[in-house]
Amino acid sequence: MLLSQIKTLDGRTAVVMRDGTEAHEVQGFPSTLELAQHCIAEGRTLAEVLSSRRPGPAVDLRAALDERRVLPPLTHPDPAHLLVTGTGLTHLGSALTRDAMHRDDNVADTPVTDSMRMFRMGLEGGRPEEGREGVQPEWFYKGDGHCVVAPGAELRMPGFAQDGGEEPEIAGLYVIGPDGVPFRLGFALGNEFSDHVMEKVNYLYLAHSKLRQASYGPEILVGRLPEDIRGTSRVRRGGEVLFEQPFLSGEANMSHSIANLEHHHFKYDQFRRPGDVHVHMFGTATLSFAAGVVTEPGDVFEIEAPAFGLPLTNRLGRAPAATAAVAVRAL
Image (cartoon, rainbow, N blue to C red; front, top):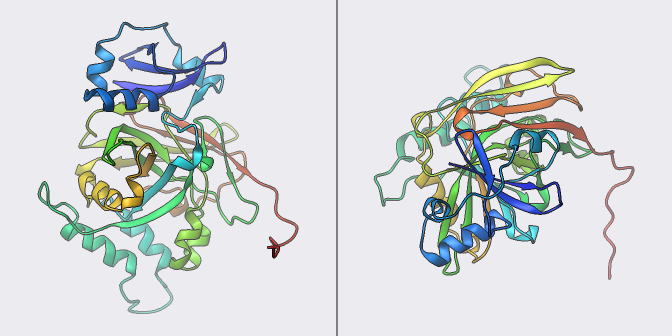
């Protein structure tokens, strides 16, 4: 079962459910957040609630996507109450890319990087027994709901950015219940857009490099995450494929379990604030940057995996460069 949000032709926001090829509106819920909150209040799952309702009007989801009417599949009316975060070095092979970015090939016997150390920690302790706490992963903050752009919309790098690179990932989508319990709606494709040139300068610039826009969707896969996800990440330029590589995800291809990554995010009290929405990215091992691609405004990122429905596409843009430093005024 797949869920999404669209703007209808008459200007409403609607929740869309898709099972197979047929998609239709979910009546009675103008947003996936309100649907989730209803399920929490009723003590029922999404599948239980949706199966008990008569289908609404049919929806051509592909046409809606082409017409830029598809919204991020989970949003909050107050963007400050939606947090976008993520983890890195969680996938088998992910450390090789990061390690290469921070290793000095001109120095013999370069010490093991912090990236490789953390990756090895995940291999050794990132998949604890059920109910046990494993080693904590790398964690980063991207922004609140203001950094989110819809599927098909432009991912815009700041004028000061040195790079605008895609990161094809799986995102977990969550709503915090009234008693502070996190509830997962499901999983979506994500583009955890980052500045890899800035990060490569120094590992301590990682936090800066992540403060960029992000996109996820178009659809939420309701239920458990498949063990073995095999998708494709592409960069197109002028209609031609500039870069194409498979990306692997799911726990069969990860050094951490999803439960361990979720625990180490939601163990913090501030991330269990009732009513908040969380979009948490689970990491990747595939980057066009690692293949030597230098992206340019106008390039199109395309991320797809069959289980997640429609592909996630976004065009790269750049904001104008600032003409002066930001000045702070004293009161």
